[in-house]
Image (cartoon, rainbow, N blue to C red; front, top):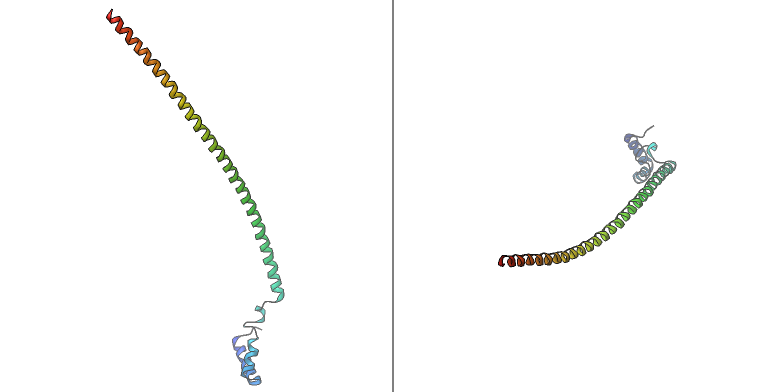
Length: 133
């Protein structure tokens, strides 16, 4: 039988007549606010604790898997950083090589320019000599 507010009120009135107002209030405060079917037992709490423990274990296993996957990602980033370091070294070496090639090209161009100018002066000299003859 479910306890209604009306039956609780009648119980309080009867207790008040038998025990007095103060004692009736103290006794009524020890009753659950709803029916006994709604009050959790130790067995209910133990079952709840077991279910929560199982859920936390599943969550813990998921975190272990997430940690493992983050480890894989960290290793991949480490490999990318290593490769980028190699690319930086290659680019720096290439820049040095290009600078050296340009220095050599400039020196070669200077030599060719002097040779072309010498030939030009010789040809012009030969033409002038031929015209004077």
